[in-house]
Image (cartoon, rainbow, N blue to C red; front, top):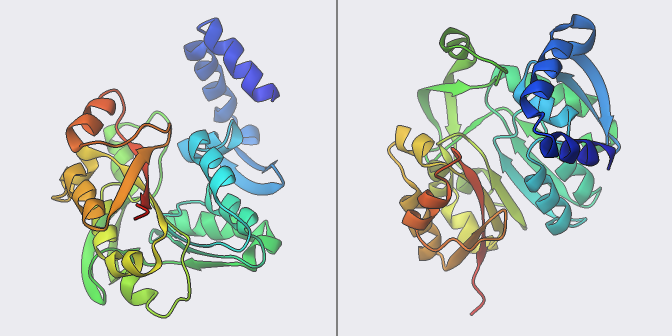
Length: 278
């Protein structure tokens, strides 16, 4: 509550740039940059030079997503998370679904997976219902391919430092359908993989048809295009499965054109797709 009130105060007085400047100074000191913190009963090790970690430190990484998870997940739910990164949402999911639920968290990069595992090690009770899986999820299983994947998201990056944040992944590629062919239920599939999202959906089509889970997926046209896909591909995919979608703010997703217009001021948003009731 204090942080929300402070944020409103900063916005009201238009102090965002000044606050950002002073926080950068604070984060530049080694004593403050690396911290172990607790938020809502969950412990995290954060690096305040990283944007995701900084989000965790402040109001939580992607507050709208956190609010959606708190409002829509239930104890006992089974969740597939593709693109767990450092666990900003994974740990929250694990806490919500409890000992009778289960989380399968996929993260292929060395840097993020190490931090993901470290954060779960700080929360032993949340390890019991969670599998951390260091694999690349796409639409083809059992193949060897090379991918360049961003694993770190440093604040105030330059072009050269941005290149250093990417990892060259060369390893086994799995798909959701094959990996989960014997699972008894799935309540939610959450996908956030920076432009590989449609390919993950393609590899999860039979799982979605069979279990009818909610699908929470990142929507970003520019990143999708880098991999030969589009927002239209995602909307057509869900339409064929008789699913409809809304954005995190509750706005109904009508068409790819309208969606692109609504995202004109941001690089991406998140869509929540649910099966239509006949």
